[in-house]
Amino acid sequence: MATKFPRSSAWALYFVSMVVLTPPRYCSSVRIVPPAVFVFGGTLVDAGTNAFLPYSTAIAANFPFYGIDFFDSVPHGRFSNGRVVADEVARRIGFEMSPPSFLSLVAGGYPSYKFNRTITSRGVNFASAFSGILSSTGRAYGQVVPYPEQVRQFSTSVAGNLTAVLGQPGSANFIRQSFFLFSVGVGDTVEYIQNLTAGRPYYRSDDLFLDALISQFVGGLLVT
Ligand SMILES: *[C@@H]1O[C@H](CO)[C@@H](O)[C@H](O)[C@H]1NC(C)=O
Ligand SMILES: *[C@@H]1O[C@H](CO)[C@@H](O)[C@H](O)[C@H]1NC(C)=O
Ligand SMILES: *[C@@H]1O[C@H](CO)[C@@H](O)[C@H](O)[C@H]1NC(C)=O
Image (tube, rainbow, N blue to C red; front, side, top):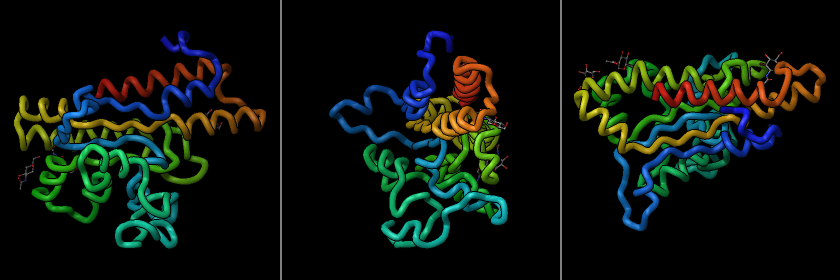
Protein backbone atom coordinates (compact mmCIF):
# COMPACT_ATOMS: atom_id res chain seq x y z
CA MET A 1 0.00 0.00 0.00
CA ALA A 2 2.85 2.35 0.75
CA THR A 3 3.83 2.48 -2.88
CA LYS A 4 0.72 4.56 -3.57
CA PHE A 5 2.16 7.37 -1.45
CA PRO A 6 4.28 10.09 -3.07
CA ARG A 7 7.95 9.27 -2.81
CA SER A 8 9.11 12.37 -1.01
CA SER A 9 9.65 11.92 2.69
CA ALA A 10 8.18 15.36 3.25
CA TRP A 11 4.89 13.75 2.31
CA ALA A 12 5.43 11.08 4.91
CA LEU A 13 5.60 13.85 7.46
CA TYR A 14 2.44 15.36 6.10
CA PHE A 15 0.46 12.15 6.10
CA VAL A 16 1.66 10.54 9.25
CA SER A 17 2.40 13.43 11.56
CA MET A 18 -1.08 14.20 12.78
CA VAL A 19 -3.73 11.56 12.44
CA VAL A 20 -6.83 12.01 14.51
CA LEU A 21 -9.18 9.08 14.69
CA THR A 22 -12.54 10.24 15.81
CA PRO A 23 -16.13 9.63 14.90
CA PRO A 24 -17.40 12.51 12.74
CA ARG A 25 -20.10 13.39 15.23
CA TYR A 26 -17.51 15.08 17.47
CA CYS A 27 -16.85 17.49 14.66
CA SER A 28 -20.47 18.51 14.27
CA SER A 29 -21.88 21.59 15.95
CA VAL A 30 -23.56 19.50 18.64
CA ARG A 31 -20.99 19.12 21.35
CA ILE A 32 -20.65 15.60 22.67
CA VAL A 33 -17.74 15.11 25.02
CA PRO A 34 -16.09 11.73 24.48
CA PRO A 35 -15.64 9.64 27.65
CA ALA A 36 -11.84 9.71 27.45
CA VAL A 37 -8.84 10.76 25.39
CA PHE A 38 -5.93 8.47 24.49
CA VAL A 39 -2.78 10.09 23.16
CA PHE A 40 0.10 8.40 21.34
CA GLY A 41 3.15 10.01 19.82
CA GLY A 42 6.15 12.21 20.36
CA THR A 43 7.35 15.59 21.53
CA LEU A 44 4.35 17.68 20.50
CA VAL A 45 1.98 15.71 22.70
CA ASP A 46 4.17 14.36 25.54
CA ALA A 47 2.51 15.45 28.80
CA GLY A 48 5.20 14.18 31.14
CA THR A 49 6.08 10.63 30.13
CA ASN A 50 9.82 11.19 29.81
CA ALA A 51 9.98 12.74 33.28
CA PHE A 52 9.29 9.24 34.65
CA LEU A 53 12.10 7.52 32.77
CA PRO A 54 15.39 7.00 34.65
CA TYR A 55 16.82 10.46 35.17
CA SER A 56 20.32 9.69 33.92
CA THR A 57 19.25 8.42 30.52
CA ALA A 58 16.00 10.19 29.72
CA ILE A 59 15.44 13.27 27.62
CA ALA A 60 13.16 15.09 29.99
CA ALA A 61 11.73 18.56 30.48
CA ASN A 62 10.77 18.55 34.13
CA PHE A 63 12.91 21.47 35.19
CA PRO A 64 12.64 25.27 34.86
CA PHE A 65 11.82 27.07 32.73
CA TYR A 66 9.66 24.46 31.05
CA GLY A 67 6.10 24.96 32.20
CA ILE A 68 6.59 28.53 33.31
CA ASP A 69 3.33 29.57 31.61
CA PHE A 70 1.41 26.46 32.67
CA PHE A 71 -1.46 26.76 35.18
CA ASP A 72 0.78 26.55 38.22
CA SER A 73 4.07 27.59 36.56
CA VAL A 74 5.50 24.21 37.52
CA PRO A 75 7.46 22.07 35.05
CA HIS A 76 5.35 18.95 34.43
CA GLY A 77 7.63 17.39 31.86
CA ARG A 78 6.05 19.00 28.84
CA PHE A 79 8.50 20.27 26.22
CA SER A 80 6.87 23.66 26.27
CA ASN A 81 6.65 26.83 28.31
CA GLY A 82 2.95 26.02 28.71
CA ARG A 83 0.49 23.67 27.10
CA VAL A 84 1.33 21.14 24.41
CA VAL A 85 -0.81 20.13 21.43
CA ALA A 86 -2.41 17.30 23.43
CA ASP A 87 -3.62 19.80 26.06
CA GLU A 88 -5.13 22.04 23.41
CA VAL A 89 -6.86 19.20 21.57
CA ALA A 90 -8.24 17.83 24.86
CA ARG A 91 -9.43 21.29 25.84
CA ARG A 92 -11.28 21.73 22.56
CA ILE A 93 -13.21 18.52 23.02
CA GLY A 94 -14.29 19.31 26.55
CA PHE A 95 -11.49 18.38 28.98
CA GLU A 96 -9.36 20.71 31.03
CA MET A 97 -6.10 19.44 29.59
CA SER A 98 -4.38 16.27 28.36
CA PRO A 99 -4.96 13.14 30.41
CA PRO A 100 -1.98 12.24 32.62
CA SER A 101 0.93 10.22 31.32
CA PHE A 102 0.74 6.47 31.67
CA LEU A 103 4.04 6.31 33.53
CA SER A 104 2.84 8.86 36.07
CA LEU A 105 -0.17 6.62 36.74
CA VAL A 106 1.85 3.50 37.40
CA ALA A 107 4.80 5.14 39.13
CA GLY A 108 5.14 4.72 42.86
CA GLY A 109 2.28 2.29 43.34
CA TYR A 110 -0.54 4.55 42.22
CA PRO A 111 -3.61 2.91 43.80
CA SER A 112 -5.69 0.83 41.45
CA TYR A 113 -8.94 2.64 42.20
CA LYS A 114 -7.31 5.93 41.15
CA PHE A 115 -5.84 4.28 38.07
CA ASN A 116 -9.27 2.92 37.20
CA ARG A 117 -10.94 6.26 37.83
CA THR A 118 -8.45 8.12 35.67
CA ILE A 119 -8.62 5.74 32.73
CA THR A 120 -12.43 5.73 32.80
CA SER A 121 -12.90 9.46 33.27
CA ARG A 122 -10.03 11.14 31.40
CA GLY A 123 -7.99 8.62 29.48
CA VAL A 124 -4.23 8.25 29.28
CA ASN A 125 -1.37 9.94 27.48
CA PHE A 126 1.34 7.51 26.31
CA ALA A 127 3.33 9.98 24.21
CA SER A 128 7.07 10.27 24.73
CA ALA A 129 9.17 13.14 23.45
CA PHE A 130 11.77 12.26 20.79
CA SER A 131 10.19 8.86 20.26
CA GLY A 132 9.12 7.58 16.87
CA ILE A 133 7.02 4.99 15.18
CA LEU A 134 10.23 3.01 14.80
CA SER A 135 11.73 1.67 18.01
CA SER A 136 15.16 2.94 16.99
CA THR A 137 14.09 6.58 16.74
CA GLY A 138 15.38 8.84 19.50
CA ARG A 139 17.79 6.21 20.85
CA ALA A 140 20.75 8.35 19.90
CA TYR A 141 19.57 10.99 22.37
CA GLY A 142 18.50 8.88 25.31
CA GLN A 143 15.76 6.67 26.58
CA VAL A 144 12.28 7.16 25.16
CA VAL A 145 9.07 5.13 24.98
CA PRO A 146 8.64 4.25 21.29
CA TYR A 147 5.23 3.96 19.68
CA PRO A 148 5.19 0.12 19.66
CA GLU A 149 5.75 0.19 23.42
CA GLN A 150 3.05 2.86 23.87
CA VAL A 151 0.64 0.58 22.04
CA ARG A 152 1.69 -2.31 24.26
CA GLN A 153 1.04 -0.21 27.37
CA PHE A 154 -2.44 0.51 26.09
CA SER A 155 -3.29 -3.07 25.18
CA THR A 156 -1.71 -4.90 28.11
CA SER A 157 -2.49 -2.50 30.91
CA VAL A 158 -5.16 0.06 30.13
CA ALA A 159 -7.43 -2.01 27.91
CA GLY A 160 -7.22 -4.90 30.38
CA ASN A 161 -8.27 -2.73 33.29
CA LEU A 162 -11.04 -1.10 31.26
CA THR A 163 -12.42 -4.55 30.59
CA ALA A 164 -12.06 -5.52 34.24
CA VAL A 165 -13.91 -2.40 35.35
CA LEU A 166 -16.52 -2.00 32.63
CA GLY A 167 -16.94 -5.54 31.35
CA GLN A 168 -16.28 -6.70 27.80
CA PRO A 169 -19.10 -4.93 25.92
CA GLY A 170 -18.85 -1.85 28.13
CA SER A 171 -15.15 -1.52 27.50
CA ALA A 172 -15.50 -2.00 23.74
CA ASN A 173 -18.16 0.66 23.71
CA PHE A 174 -16.05 3.00 25.82
CA ILE A 175 -13.06 2.64 23.51
CA ARG A 176 -15.24 3.15 20.45
CA GLN A 177 -16.55 6.43 21.81
CA SER A 178 -13.19 7.68 23.04
CA PHE A 179 -11.00 10.15 21.23
CA PHE A 180 -7.66 8.85 19.93
CA LEU A 181 -4.95 11.36 19.07
CA PHE A 182 -1.85 10.22 17.20
CA SER A 183 1.01 12.63 16.60
CA VAL A 184 3.66 10.37 15.13
CA GLY A 185 6.26 10.20 12.39
CA VAL A 186 7.99 13.53 12.94
CA GLY A 187 10.96 12.12 14.85
CA ASP A 188 11.33 9.26 12.39
CA THR A 189 11.36 11.61 9.44
CA VAL A 190 13.85 13.97 11.07
CA GLU A 191 16.15 11.04 11.79
CA TYR A 192 15.69 9.67 8.29
CA ILE A 193 16.79 12.99 6.84
CA GLN A 194 19.67 13.26 9.32
CA ASN A 195 20.90 9.82 8.28
CA LEU A 196 20.65 10.79 4.61
CA THR A 197 22.46 14.07 5.18
CA ALA A 198 25.19 12.34 7.14
CA GLY A 199 25.74 10.04 4.17
CA ARG A 200 24.71 6.88 6.03
CA PRO A 201 21.17 6.09 4.97
CA TYR A 202 19.68 3.17 6.83
CA TYR A 203 16.89 2.50 4.32
CA ARG A 204 17.73 2.02 0.67
CA SER A 205 14.89 4.26 -0.54
CA ASP A 206 12.15 6.61 0.60
CA ASP A 207 9.64 3.91 -0.24
CA LEU A 208 11.27 1.37 2.03
CA PHE A 209 11.34 3.91 4.84
CA LEU A 210 7.67 4.74 4.30
CA ASP A 211 6.80 1.04 4.16
CA ALA A 212 8.49 0.53 7.51
CA LEU A 213 6.72 3.54 9.06
CA ILE A 214 3.31 2.71 7.73
CA SER A 215 3.35 -0.97 8.52
CA GLN A 216 4.52 -0.29 12.07
CA PHE A 217 1.92 2.45 12.52
CA VAL A 218 -0.95 0.45 11.09
CA GLY A 219 0.15 -2.59 13.09
CA GLY A 220 -0.20 -0.43 16.19
CA LEU A 221 -3.63 0.80 15.15
CA LEU A 222 -4.83 -2.77 14.81
CA VAL A 223 -3.72 -3.46 18.38
CA THR A 224 -5.40 -0.34 19.77
C1 LIG B 1 -9.32 -1.60 39.28
O1 LIG B 1 -9.35 -2.56 38.27
C2 LIG B 1 -8.72 -3.80 38.57
C3 LIG B 1 -8.84 -4.70 37.41
O2 LIG B 1 -7.97 -4.37 36.45
C4 LIG B 1 -9.37 -4.44 39.75
O3 LIG B 1 -8.63 -5.61 40.10
C5 LIG B 1 -9.36 -3.47 40.89
O4 LIG B 1 -10.09 -4.05 41.96
C6 LIG B 1 -9.99 -2.18 40.50
N1 LIG B 1 -9.92 -1.30 41.59
C7 LIG B 1 -11.02 -0.73 42.10
C8 LIG B 1 -10.82 0.05 43.35
O5 LIG B 1 -12.09 -0.81 41.56
C1 LIG C 1 -4.10 -2.98 35.33
O1 LIG C 1 -3.02 -2.04 35.29
C2 LIG C 1 -1.92 -2.42 36.07
C3 LIG C 1 -0.94 -1.27 36.06
O2 LIG C 1 -0.42 -1.08 34.81
C4 LIG C 1 -1.34 -3.70 35.53
O3 LIG C 1 -0.24 -4.11 36.30
C5 LIG C 1 -2.41 -4.78 35.52
O4 LIG C 1 -1.90 -5.94 34.91
C6 LIG C 1 -3.63 -4.30 34.77
N1 LIG C 1 -4.70 -5.28 34.91
C7 LIG C 1 -5.29 -5.84 33.87
C8 LIG C 1 -6.39 -6.78 34.18
O5 LIG C 1 -4.99 -5.59 32.72
C1 LIG D 1 19.32 6.18 11.35
O1 LIG D 1 20.54 5.52 11.54
C2 LIG D 1 20.64 4.76 12.73
C3 LIG D 1 22.06 4.22 12.85
O2 LIG D 1 22.40 3.48 11.71
C4 LIG D 1 19.63 3.62 12.67
O3 LIG D 1 19.65 2.85 13.84
C5 LIG D 1 18.24 4.24 12.52
O4 LIG D 1 17.29 3.21 12.37
C6 LIG D 1 18.19 5.16 11.30
N1 LIG D 1 16.89 5.80 11.30
C7 LIG D 1 16.23 6.09 10.19
C8 LIG D 1 14.87 6.65 10.36
O5 LIG D 1 16.67 5.93 9.07
